Length: 518
Image (cartoon, rainbow, N blue to C red):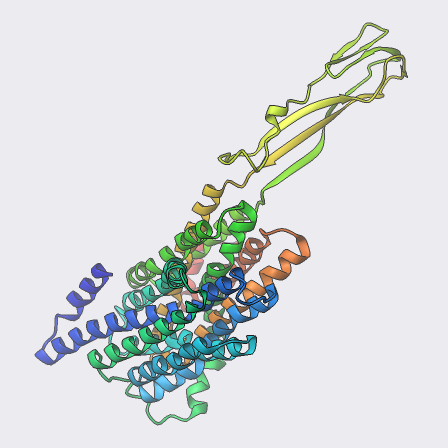
């Protein structure tokens, strides 16, 4: 982050007047406060994932898995659907006042969680503080007015570092709950108080050290005029990209903990740590994605993230499995009578002796004791199907062959590919938002809001889809198949659009590249 800020300051601090220099420094200050505020809001937005799990695990409440899922997803849903109206408000009134009021408003229902005693109470409070998730739309709109088109990608990438708030909640909220409830389990109620206090304190700092600035053309436009960009297919295409990148990030930040627990039978604390290895880098590399988008262009970064993201999903798909399949058997070469049939050999009256592969128990690996196997391991054996004294005919199967394939889906290889996917999602999130001020400089709030809505809805809907796929197939890895299909759809659509644009804008270059048609 420091490198990105230095770069922004250096480029912005080549003014022709002291006024421009002061504006550049104000932009850097606003960016820092925006990023910190987003991190606090994102951490608060993800609080239910830890708190609800803790309350059920400690038998404070006896909610079903589906009830837990609804509670955990409720703030995500609110944060998603509110991004568009928040973006519209930012275009009209400016991002500073909207961001400030959003944090104060979200702090109220967050504090109300303290007094929740029934399921409905938690549901309503979650709907309220989920507004914190809409802070992204406010932050994007407010950041965009301070930086030029040349540096907006880097600025938005740095702002996106606030995604790390999810990792902060995943790592520290469980430890905080453990300490708070060491002597009295009912002291869990202090956790939402702490989050509410953080939101209020952050709102105060934000208001004291930021400055009012908004899009000059935004003031008096009607609602229909503000929504006009939504008729462009391009906006919805950006939304699909963001549904994969951001929706995938939010969904997996919640889904990976039960994934690790169920597939690799590890403790929740360990699963939480490994999940943080996905969510933390994904947030941190977002600044790099913004810088790369400024340097090489957003589309280049999109290609560079969708392709490895698709490959990561494909490599993650093979499930841990044991496969038994027919192997090489032994067939009688002529008519004869069996004179001996053991696990080692079969002898016939015509003098033929067939050696058998015996089953080696040492090669029959399992998931309990064999933890560090990367490649599939095979074991082969043959078992006699005939008995001593039995008459056999030419071509008859004497011994059945069996091949056993053991694939562990090694947890460290799995974590590596999850880490790669997390990095590609972080880079891709920044690349998507680099497009918005480029194509819609006067409607960053509304377009960014809609794109954020679709991304947030992905974060709400994807875990539900994952659950249905798991229930229908019994395979945890179906979530990777779903994400792979979505990544492929994004990649194909983007590539087709780019080819069409090339043919329309530089047809001569396209003809030279493709060469004469045969």
